[in-house]
Structures are given as C-alpha cells and as structure tokens.
Image (cartoon, rainbow, N blue to C red; front, side, top):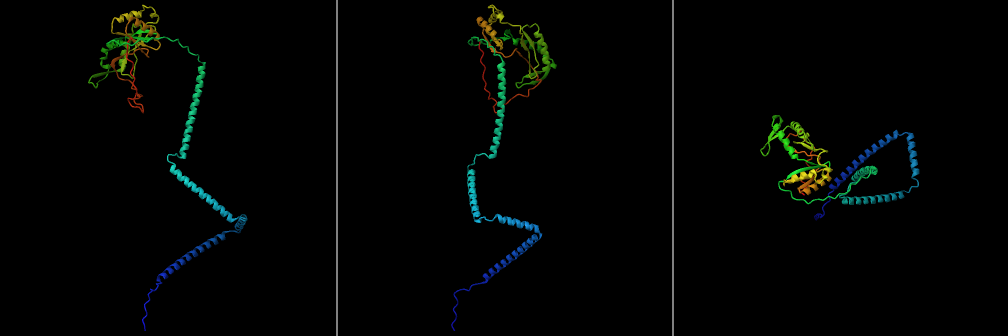
Length: 380
C-alpha cells in the first residue's frame, strides 16, 4: 500500500484564538454585571424618589408638562437647528477675529501704556490742570486788586534829568594814602576810620594782657601762638573806650555793638546828620573844602576817595568839581552803609555759631559760580 505524502500546508493552531475569545466573553460578562448593578441602583433611587412624590406635586408636574407642550407646538425644529448653526458660525468667526487681533496687538504692543495707567495719568493731569486753574484765578484776583490800588495811587513826580560828566580814569600814585570822605545825608565827612582803630587798639593793649581777659591759647598751622580773648569782657572794655573816643567829637558818634556770631570786635563810626560840609558850605569859591584840599595836595601821595551813599550824589558831584579844580587825585565808590566799622586786631571767641549756612547747592559743583572781578581803582 503506498505511503501518504506529507501535507505541504501546516495546520492552523486554534489555541490563541480560543484564548482571545475567552477574554472577550469574560470582559463582556463583567460589563454586563456592572450595568446590571447600576440599573438596579438607579431603579431603587427612582422608586425611592417616586414614593416621596405626592399626588399634588404630580399634578403640578403634569400641568407644567402640558404647558411646555403647548409652547413647542408649531415650532420648526429644523429651522431652529439651522439658526443655531448659523449663530455658532458667527460666533466662531468673531472668535477667530478676536484671536487674530489679540495676536497682532501682542506683537505691536511694545512701548504702549496699559489702560489703567492711562486712566491714572488722566487723573493726575486733571488734578494738575485744576491746580493751575486755581493759581491762575488767584493771580488774576491779585492783579485786579493791584490795578485797583494803582488806579487810586497818584503818579510820582519824575525828577528832572541831570548831565553828569564822567572823568577819564588815571592810574593811582604808588604807595598812595587814601583820604576817606563819606557822602551821606547830602553832606561831606572826612572820616579816617584807621586812625580811630589804632587809637582803640592802643588804649586796649595793656588791659587785654590781664589773665581774666584771655579765653584760650593755641598754636596755628604756621606755628604762631594765638590768643583768643573773652568776647563779652572785650566788648565791655571797648564800650567804655568808645565812650571816651566819642567825647568832644562833633562830626561822628563812636560806639560798638555785641556781634555774637563774629570772632572779632569792631568800633562803629556813624556821621552826625547836622555835622560835616553841607551844600550851602560849598557854594562860595573860597569854601572851607577847597582850603582843606589845597592843604592835602601838598603831599603827592594823598588821594581823595569818596564813599557815596544813595542820597548824596549831588554833593559828591560838587565836591568832585572842587577837587578837579584844585588838582588833587580822587576817586569814588558807591557805599551802601550809613557808617564805617573798622575791625580790631583782637581775636575773640564766638558766642553763637550759625547752623543754617548753605555749603553746597544740589546739582551744582563747588566751584561752578561765575566770579566777576570788580573794577580796578583809578583816579580822576
């Protein structure tokens, strides 16, 4: 009997397929069990809720359902769906535009201010404008008041003009001696303040050596011995001596003042309003000023120097003409004070120290101030 030829095709193994089917059936069974449990739970919940519903609530529910059914009669559901789709399409298009705008705004918003910041800036500007309006209103009111006061004020009398000849400046002689003349109260006063200063120092020298007059001693940076005298005691002594200097003096009043912030004492020389040379004294060609200037001219180093107060320009011009006629060198300075106060050589302690001195201006360097040199002295 012939042998069977072996089959060229291999047999199909069904074990894998059976395992898969078994797993699927098992999963389905589990799902079925879970669903059954959930349905049972839901049914129990519904039964519990239905048991609690009264007949009255049931009738109310039925009436609401009947009312809602009346409202939906004649409603075309397809039309509503179409309108809904169209509305949603418009919403999607608007949202797309918003997204595009937002993206573009984010790309180009560099350097832009936030809306809140703009609102705050608006409020700030508004307050500034209101403040400026108030200031303008106050200034306008003050201007009206000033205009009303000015309207009631009589016009001032303008003095007639005067021709003033300014002489050419000449160099001062070397080693010149200054003869000081104060022009104040429209009068002339020869005032040699240096002489009064030397007299006061000479009278004080011996008494200042007393131990009770010394406040302290120290050596300065140059190695010199410096004596500081008691300010109050020095002032008391100078007051007594000033009274002695003032005795018999008809042209000036000599006194002193307690200057608590200074480290030197001074004598104060104030012209008497009834003394000196008046304008009437200078009318005659052979006036006493001319005689005195002729005597001073004998010394070539003497230079006549006028210190002119604001009320005495007329008498200065008259005295200058007399000096030019005599031929004595002369000059002048505008003088804003009503007397002279030469400083004595005795150093005293400061009784008070200033605390409100401005030593630095913010935003300005130490040497930033513009320095303008004063005019050089010349004779005429």
